[in-house]
Image 1: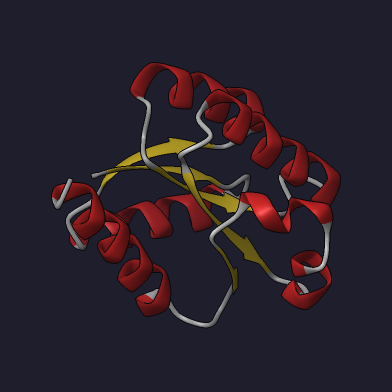
Image 2: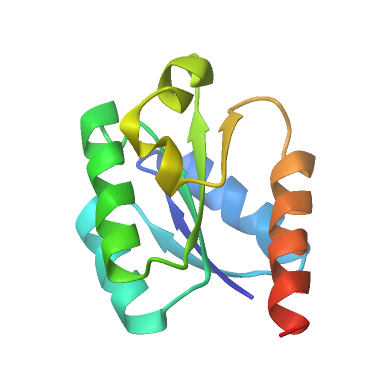
Length: 123
């Protein structure tokens, strides 16, 4: 399954893509919002992993809105280094599948992506 990964820190992007690739996912790396939108339009991935601060929370939220406008069925997982509870209460909450805290390990994200992939295969 293709997964768009939007992260403006090149080291974090590389690491996240490597971990997802090792778990069987085909990653589409993007270091900024415009690249992420271009990749989403071209490849139509069913999932996106988005850094909330891309480079600001406002821009990250705009990217989420843009991705969902492009593909309302896209599953969006948000990574944040801050307090995810503040984000969860925002208007964009309806647009995302899950908010995950950076540094909490990748196992939860990988499990969620495998769940989406399994659902896609059953259709």
